[in-house]
Image (tube, rainbow, N blue to C red; front, top):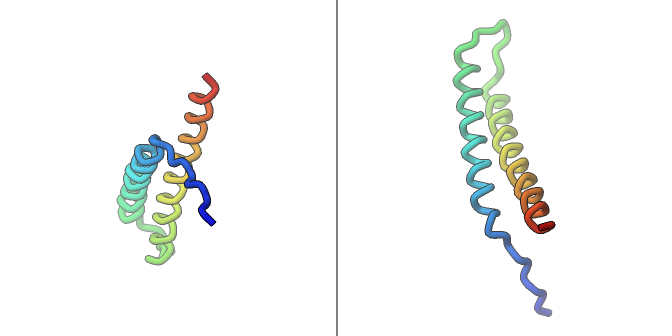
Length: 77
């Protein structure tokens, strides 16, 4: 059975790219700030990878949520 293709928004790509850029910037800031700080018990390397991946995921996810809100508002007009 052929199912109809889901319509892909034209705003999807720019919002995902913007989310990735913001996520990369925040991740770079986190790593820069974290390497400069000396604490009693430093974070293990795996924890830094997990935090960076969570920052990237959250920024792209929030960008997609923002895109949905923008499309909803534009669609109301």
